[in-house]
Length: 469
Image 1 (cartoon, rainbow, N blue to C red):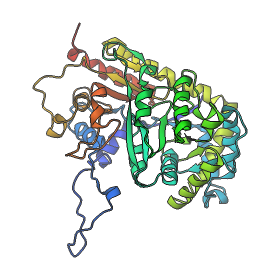
Image 2 (cartoon, rainbow, N blue to C red):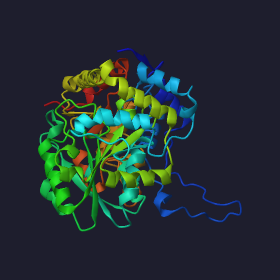
Image 3 (tube, rainbow, N blue to C red):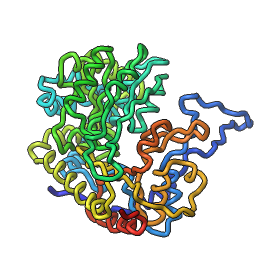
């Protein structure tokens, strides 16, 4: 399949470093007026939390190994397929594609989605009442929380989690309740399937209270790569039916699964009645910057999500909606879905060869394009110098800093979480459960093959730091 590759796959990350786009977010801001009077921000946005990329940026600039290979962020290192790019260019020449779209989304895209997803949902989806287009999947999830969460309502989230869930839940006044996914007991010593990260269903039911309004599910999962099994989804769905809890099923990696994939909304009419399914053209077509997402669900849920979307940004980008519609209309004919899945799985297998070489275990992903690697065997020198804001954080932060400085490869530490004193930024775990993943780092394989090979060659430099036996 013909693809337009980035001209320099490493220059994007390097240019962002130079531009300061990963600059720390926790520096005090001068919140004063011209008269010197303090300006008080709203509580919902006032937390100046330090995000992980401020540390990655700092380490990258200081690293003697250049340029840094960014294996942390989940942006693609290559362009969307040509038939989608061409559709975007053609859309820009159409008058109506340069004007506002209907707030629920362009009719062509809603129809294309209904046609594409009706077979998966095993019924005919209505493009008029059961699908709404949003400005990316993230804004779609915000709309869902805005539509159904009141001050003090609780939303259950599985740890580890995509960090944006939390701010989106807190924006309307919701309270996040955390239930951990438990890793395999042997995860530090041998490679195992991502399926072995398990939900304790009794623990989940104990987390449910009269204030529980929603539960957030992510399958295929970021960062683990777990595809929840039918039995797991049925157990979760039945609990939600029992307690009348809305399910927000984040399925943005729904075209990248390597084992059988079940959609929770298909398990029973009772579960479907409570389920909003989230999708993303950015993830489907390698276009994360397009910000075209959608929610699928019953009319009595979708109508309120659409109302919230109208209040937040009214409508989404017209020409890119049109291009996404063409993408769905042509993808099957072009053999795109199968090819995309095969290519990503091949990238995953090729990249993970280096961990097999080094004897470092990982969670073998069942879907998506992230891999969690356990680096417990990596022995950093006892006297290694870390900045104080790294030295005081969990071991995975030190590992992330160490990899950047020693081998020039950037990866995400999963425990990037809120410290009650320092107000650190949450990435995937809360402090109470951070110990679960303190030896793991997350790597994204959605990069060009030459970048993956270069990263592997760099990572082989870890061999001298790995404990034998």
